[in-house]
Length: 543
Image 1 (cartoon, one colour):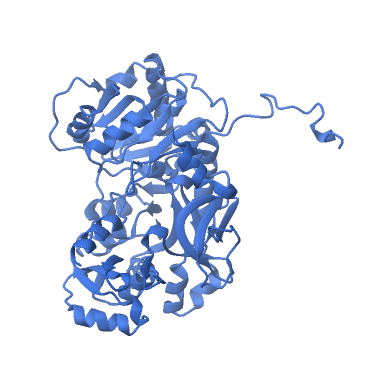
Image 2: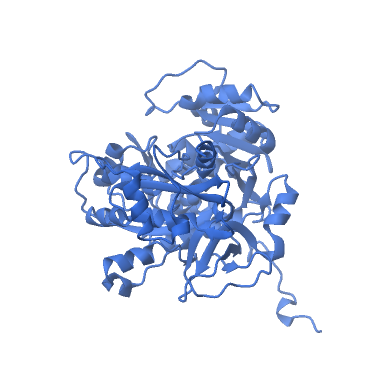
């Protein structure tokens, strides 16, 4: 076979090829719109020129301390301006950013620091006691840097940590930061929850971050100078890559240390917020706020949510309050959201119950994702597009992780057959939209029959007295497993378990009706996801 003539004497050179990296978004924003407001954090208003200069100073200061390509810099920070600076300054010196969930315990943090071989830890004053406890359990001895955020009103402890502002003040605002040697170079590492063993370190690369950051803007119809409110933790999949997206569209970050209803409504009204992301619990927090806390809005706000589909009433309340809600789906291994419930205009003319049914689906692939399908996990054959046949949701493309850090066996298993295996079970509808039915570990097998916990939850959510519900497997001597429903009631609502059982009998096959109903507060992760592993343990004790 002859060589491709279009490859002859047409080589990659610095003139026609540069590695893709989202760091260039900030450089361009600071060059083209230097005075545009990049960050709002309490009384702070910071321009793109100042944002870029501080990020370069951070990269320079880290470089002066010997931090270089492949080193890990960890950050235990809330949604503050310092966390945004870390998303740029850390990779500017070639290092890899490790964002730590602020709600983890010290032992898990210590595991992550050791596993990631952290050389620097940047910590907010609020979390310094937690970090001190974690460092006492560590083998690594990283340089400790403390961010004293003026917005933080709590207590501070004395430490030997280096002050963050003093640290970056020693850096060069004109630092000639490092482009990645290869766009496949790691830009971040984020750890999974570790509910079935030690957490796994998900490694992301510059190319994927660049592509998903742009994909966010296209998918969410973010116009130039959009205003984004940080209700989604930046430690969660690097804030779904939105720290980089906002620079691409020269938008404004509105930071929140805490997700509180009053602060959210004030930011929406006072700062002209156009977009925000969060779990359904954030919507519930906003809508359930007292009338004197909620503020009238002059703009329609785009709200992007993941996790379980929001209840129909919550969606209706959000729309009345001036929000357009779009369902996204993804995993840490896909840089955050890689699937979107792209809405067809004609669907808005359908009855509300039909619209709710359509909104409950996860949807279709993001623009930068090359492959999304529901496959038989054994044969890797696509399931029929009938909305009924279940398979495993699988991904393929440039916004899939490099792999799990220092865990080749888990990486090999995750990529078997040339697809990333999500562990989520779903169906494909005739129009090609996918819908999750369960996590593979959450399917309830009762008497040989598979029961989708999501199907039972959807039936319960239709009851007006129920605010939040989660259904898990409960051991049963006769059937092996039966459903157990944990329920949080809506404010002021009352209902007994006999009424709930009858409600389920009216909507579900008999074997799918929960054997037990538990009215309780449901445990959640810091990102609002329900901790089903904890509920499964509770269910065992109820047998």
